[in-house]
Image (cartoon, rainbow, N blue to C red; front, side):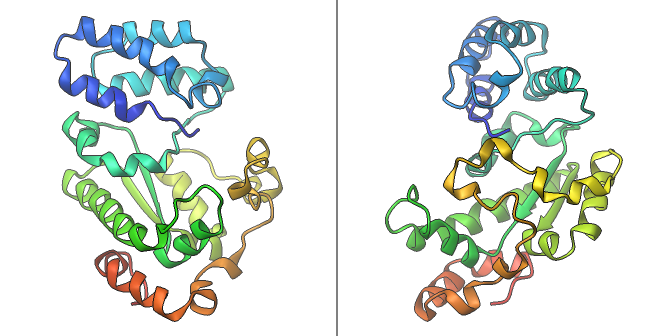
Length: 245
């Protein structure tokens, strides 16, 4: 699920100290967000969300655990998660509201920024000039999360995208162990991936297997000067995550 409510409600929790008022705001905010209907709104009605908010403690972990716990119950799933990469830019408010002192598990997937830049420049929705600004954003946000999680001893697991694609049989069982769920080889059947996302251009390869040839494709395909600029701009992050510089 990709949502856009976690950061807004974190600011409410931080700025609105009266739980009664804060709950009213959050109960109306979540169903009103842009991504509500295609994400948690597929499983929870607006009224169900409101009921959960009024039953929860006035804290980020209580709200998220109850929301996703209810979705898991409906789907018969042990674990339900959120995939919202844009939230990386707001780790500060998540830290301030106490997320990193809870039992909510974080899987952090990192990909070589040069391949990410190449991917972004092939989309229609990325802003013009993204290749000039994104490497530093990638470095700042990813290094920030890694260090916050490390310092807080939060349940956190980092995986390099390239390692996962090259060795899914080795990486997936480790992720399952981290999540506390049973591993199944069915997880490697990529034909079952992302049917509801195939209409999106940037998800068109979801069911085409593990495309190992796209790992480090920048070495052959990225213009030399652009590769140099990306490497310089994101040097600390590349070093932190073990990428060639």
